[in-house]
Length: 63
Image (tube, rainbow, N blue to C red):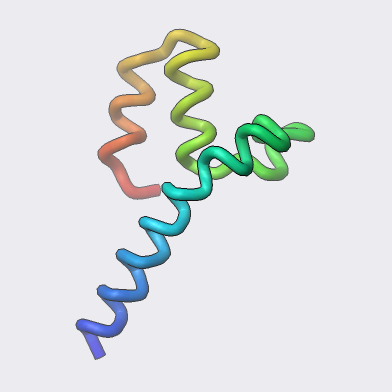
């Protein structure tokens, strides 16, 4: 059971990280924060707001 849960968790994580471009191109995380996922939020923190250290922390942490 543990290996199945690990596989689904890793698969879900990879799927979420691969969804950056469609979400960012179509909505840019908006309206508000309704379609904001972790990778879009991290990108905005780094390149829109200039908070590179916060974006680096988000990129290695699990939320």
